[in-house]
Image 1 (tube, rainbow, N blue to C red):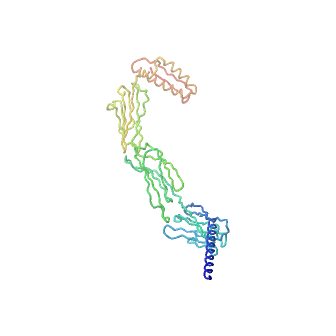
Image 2: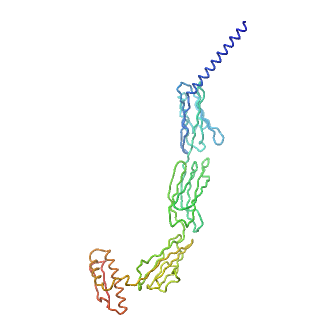
Image 3: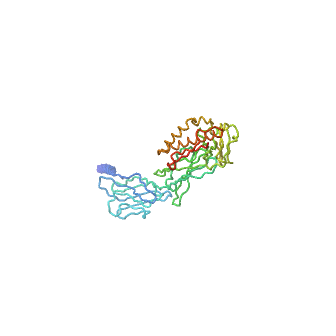
Length: 416
């Protein structure tokens, strides 16, 4: 029976050991569940600046930290590693730029934060913060570091050639930004833009520059128009206005006629006003029905049309055409010639008008005075026409209005 008794005691011992191991495992899991690694999952910094990767141990229990470790694999494949054993001090692959915030040996290692200075583009990536403790083991969490480079944003209006083909009229550049700048355009004219990426300055690694020309048909842009461009580069947004002065064909209008032409009116002129870039190189005049009347004169390529004496033949539509390197444009004006009696007041009111103007000229009413002067000049012209036709004028003596008035003094003289 003795062997059986020994076997029985062995089974009892094995069962007790198994229960003890299970109890130990339960205790470790429970302890391990009450510690955690806390991080700020996203960290940012600018090229050449500094940042901190925050990491700390959260635990209610009194645990012993045996080592702090940060790990990352660089884009070129080489590993980044920073370790801090409590008794030995830090071991860092780039000690000039990377340091633990816990600077002293045997200091409280619950703060495992890592400081990085003189940031480079290759510092960007995912870092793992690992904290080893006893007896609970290791816990870890990840931090994503994003490195930004402030771009140099510029915009310029280009000098397009005088052609009606679509061409680039403005250009925006976002240089040396990380990530590369994204350029967007908005304008009050229709156009198109494209974006090109190219290697920027000699930074290591080289940065990318975004270039975006704005293309449109010159005819779409009337004279000078503001084109607003918006650039979004990295985390900032920049807006700048551009005034584009583009070549365009002539836009023509005619001035000089105000609806008051009458038969016998002399020395009037029409002006061809053309707006274009480049300026017009040639002007030509005509009427809607053919050549110009004989009473009209203009210099070759001239923008002014002189009419010596208005007659019935001027009752027409005058057309001016202007030409530049991009094309031509034309404007027109319709002339309605009236009888003099439709424009001028009856002659029987001459003395009444002159006395009325005399009263207006003496007080200081400049606008009324000038208006009256024009009316008197019209009457003088009518009186001269009567003389030419052998009629007796309504007055034949010198009449001085307000002789002490100074610069507003007016002399009216009709020779009999």
